[in-house]
Length: 321
Image 1: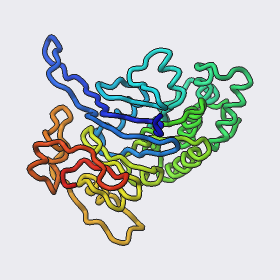
Image 2: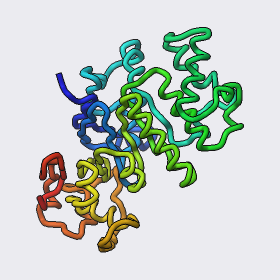
Image 3: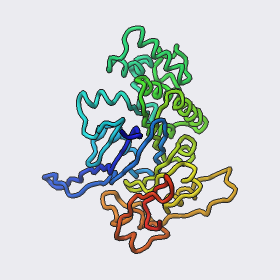
Image 4: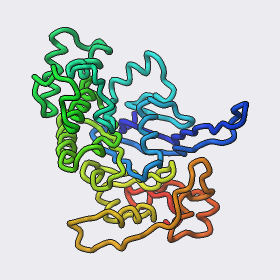
């Protein structure tokens, strides 16, 4: 049996482009184009990249909110790629999601008790006083008062609402949580509080996280390993310390050069990438980054590099290595 909690292999998501009176498919938007990675029990994998690189789509496919076009998703030893109906419902209790918008992700017509109790009631894992006790315990766990369960979402701040969202995700004792830009809508001071809460909960509940963000500093704070995505593909995966200190892929190097670092003794040389990100509806041949890469070679324009282990535990998809 695999030691990994999650194994994603060659995951793809293509959205059809329809045109004409007959709405015929004339092409595809390749939102995710062959992503592979693993998550071990108790590990946090950060996924970082520019807006539109496919990281949120990847998270939704793992959650089975969205079907994949191709590839495999193995969770806790079970292939969930094509699961439907009762089978999907049973396995879904083991992985939950924390959404980006703490305002839109909570039903304004429901009290906090109803919001957190809903997964317990739907999955018939508690009833009556058990539900109330469980909700009270979860609220205390995320730093809120049990008395807050009778209030409505509009009575809370953004940070408090995100704590409610985390409490709801914890209700079914999941093994993994997918956090999609979970702190990007919050003030900086509140971001640190929510991040520290998630770190504490990881230890308390032995959780695994997939933490999706465009913020390199946030990903560095919470992650054990980091995956860098560009144009629907994973271009580098590495332990956090190795990636931030010794990045291999030119895209990762450019990203890190743009991120301010207060504690770093030697300032990185700022790398300004030329041109725009290519359209996922018409991605370039070969390496997806070659149109903007400052170290492009002829082979980059022809052959797509594979994600290979360059150093122990450090993978990169680049012909330079």
